[in-house]
Image (tube, rainbow, N blue to C red; front, top):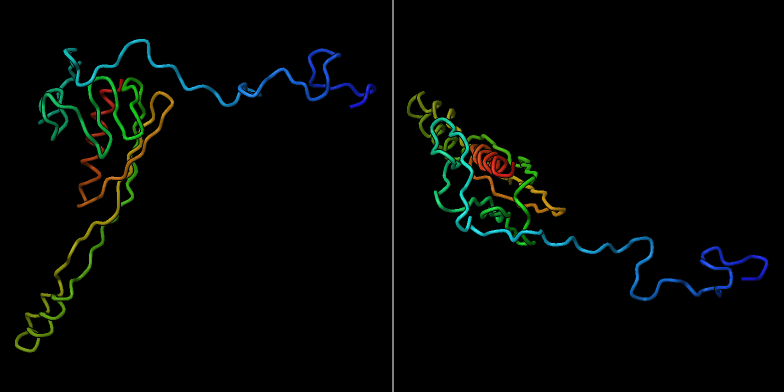
Length: 184
């Protein structure tokens, strides 16, 4: 730089070109940002003697527990677990309070006629016309996954749960609704 065109980034006019105020360990423009500080209180695992807030019971369910949940134990959805006031995932722990839960159904159920029904229909058609009733046989098969995501404390985690039957999504949504009620 010449004297006629001073360094616009220098804080004082006498600073030499390329002589910047920040050093090798300092970030420019605010990047990278430091990791968030741990919470002021220490989260407890499994309640650690703290009472669990009771929710009004849903009809047909044990008070304060999701269907299938074991009293005295946390909730687990795929590789996401809830213990006490924290969410435990393979990527780290997150605070339970204020967590956002979402589920996406990526499964499908197909209904088709099995091959053995066609064979039986042909064999019994030759002997009697009742063999055509075998063509009414249907087979349902569910494939795919249900994606569950949780956002809390500036972190995000996603897991995929295999769908084994048409009611898998309803079961996962029931677990997520219980987790949402704990996150309030």
